[in-house]
Length: 371
Image 1 (cartoon, rainbow, N blue to C red):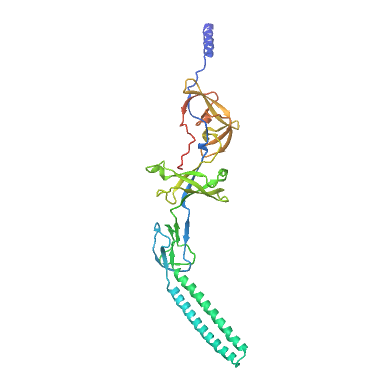
Image 2: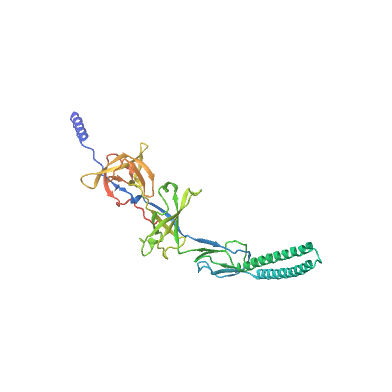
């Protein structure tokens, strides 16, 4: 019995001296970080618009009797778009012209009276005060003639306002009138957009306004371009206008980018990506999935590759994180260019754990122009 107990104790001692079985390395998705300025470029999504958008309407009220264009029609400056019923206006013109003739007749009579009264004054038959009365009546007649002519001119102009004409070359994008509809003066009837000058309207966050100025060069790429024959086609652009105040709703600034060499592929209302190549210092950017919290401090897992090449050891490292960008998180302290960090499953790693290195594409922070 004692021999059995001794043999059992010896077995336990031998097993205790054996090394524990090391678990197999777990796969880890890692990326090599590096300083880059190109990845810091701001990429925003905007809407293709025309630089000139005209909302036009009649200058007088009336009833529409004819509409000559439809949505999508291409128009030229001076082309008639719609007409109002001019019957009442034509009658008004006739009345104004009749008033002019009546005023001229009254003036002619006043001139004759003044001429006769002057002859009587010369012969001393009437006093000068009597002549002054007739001369005053002549001046009143002259004023009435001028008034009637001015009113006739107004009526004549209004008769021309019955035709709604395009104020520029462009395409009709909106119509709010049909024959038989009665409209007020100034009410919008049609919208015309100039397709010769195309822009992209983007909203720039207030945090990215530093350094942005009028004249900056940008690159524009269509969202629909990735489905076309040439998905990599881009357009050059230039910042033309920056809103002086931010929107009260979004706290973003409206920025208009003029597109150079616009073609028929740039259609109004389409979505486009705009890359602002801002002059920013080089920075180290890691994917947001690589950043974690250890002991309440921002940290990343750095992977040191062993000699075997495919194995590495994961070690946590405290870092200082800067702003969050469209490409990832800017690391201001704690990482050097060329180091390897884990970018997935960082919450399950253990200090000193061996991992099977699986590289992600080199440009993990690259952002395409298309949204």
